[in-house]
Length: 88
Image (cartoon, rainbow, N blue to C red; front, side):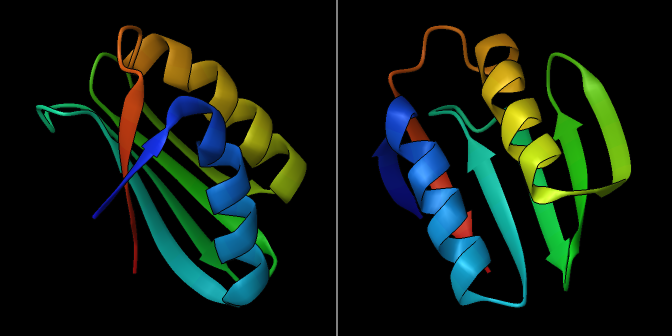
């Protein structure tokens, strides 16, 4: 699990989406009680959020996923400067 700054999350996600045709990315806070999962299967994405809010969305494109992650990081990790990032 890597520790990345809040602003570097977008860059890390784009790199992993470009490198892998299918992958599972997990973003979590220090206490690891809140998390965001992004699952990529070929061209479509699945978004799961488990924390302050519980959201599950399917069949999203890359632009919608990036927008959703940026917005929901403010809700899920309001005081976190560093985010734990795991790619499988």
